[in-house]
Length: 363
Ligand code: PEP
Ligand code: MN
Image (cartoon, rainbow, N blue to C red):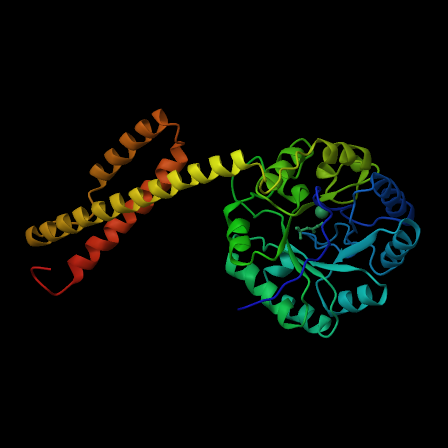
């Protein structure tokens, strides 16, 4: 779907878009004191706070509800900071609009459900309020795009996305694994979407927030959303990942801002030369892969004539093991070698299967 998308937040040159505030609004003083401290930093664009909280199990703190919207209004009046909160149904949208929340966001558990996204889209219809769409909890790019399209079709033109990582079953240092290639592909398809990293929900802990924020900026993200609380250890939700406004200020200070390009002729020249070499290598790789597939076809025909099975597990194991060792000598990670060769191998199998299944005896 063709979309003409405008920025959610006007970017100040030389620094990322910054969204910060507590995971949840807990009380007027907690909200206002956080906002006051954040406003002092001078680089915060948007104050976040959850009013309705989607919790995994009932009985946990599920948000203060509408009363908290009054506190967000005070934040704006007192500090001038614009505000944003999560909405998941019609009532949330109506209440948030009534209380002049500036930007709405869709949470990961909403994006995952087209019924809910549509309900929110229908409630927004006709109001051109900016909307940020978090990635769905499962790594499904189409579902993420679908949610963006539903919001766009409701007449919203200022849409951005928040990358908060994906659920993962197993051991990982992340609370939600980033799978950077998914948001990168989204940005490739829709270059006008502002993309914000939610380092808090990716990390789930304090000590890795800086690295993940930096990585996102190195990947040319537009900004970050971080959970900030005056007394993080006492937070009613997501205590382990929240940081004080002061620590957040230090995090922002330590970020390396890299430019997209440079006017320096030497830089332009060097980068052009290197990119040219990369393009040539890519072309060589494709030629080689083409040749490899032709050989696989030959083998397929030969196996067919001799009625031999396509997959020879032992040989495949040998190829993979050998390549991992060789790859290591070239500075290639085992993971990469394995993913790459598996894809190549699968393509060979597909080719050979097509040959096996063709009616032509001499295929
Ligand atoms: C949040 O931002 O506090 C939140 C609930 O996030 P997510 O939807 O990413 O889980
Ligand atoms: Mn949270």
